[in-house]
Length: 277
Image 1: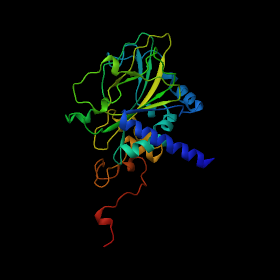
Image 2: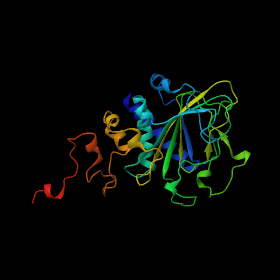
Image 3: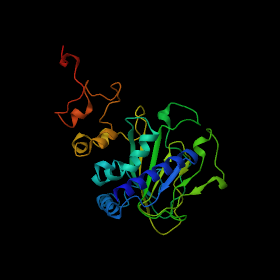
Image 4: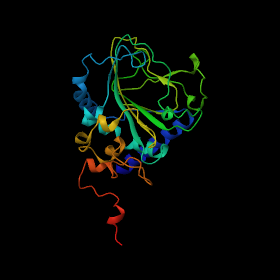
């Protein structure tokens, strides 16, 4: 049984990687157990009261957005560090990659389409596309994504497009998927939230990951400070930014590893004068 599970994981990984290379996105069906979905919903329920509506057309005037999710829902870690997603990231991003953003998006009836955009802005470096992506995004469906309720829209192959090319109607694909499924896509893929013409809300959660040298979209070490971060796994702590890029020392705090903020007994690399002579 374990061998069958491992084989299934491997097949899903290879399919996802192939899809990302060819189309710029992949859909992994029914990856999240219903029990986990319910736990996350319950932990986030206090924040979905119709008060955190978007402030502009990008956030969505008819959309609730909840940020800093790891400070609000401990169960969120289980999708952020899902083994299959981590395996994809290990193959597509440099070591020591970071969690760039993690937010919930609850699209209400009447919402209009987002502007087309990419999630990977390359840290404002002005590097023209097409180029290698510096990020990978995921969108987990907590409700069925349908053509009428605001399903994410993607432009297959646009991860290879140059800057300035605009999609035409025939280029656009609505990502219809069942609750519990996840959309994984290249950071340079054109996409947008669709219009919600239904009578139902559509909830999604989107963890986004980036190369270690970029600034995160969310300031994670402030969004999830040490008192909250120390309860998570070392992987989640590293994704948040409690790490250093190795080789090197980008990310240190007062000359020491930031994990010292989480565990005063943490033994990282020793200072030179602590080394044996």
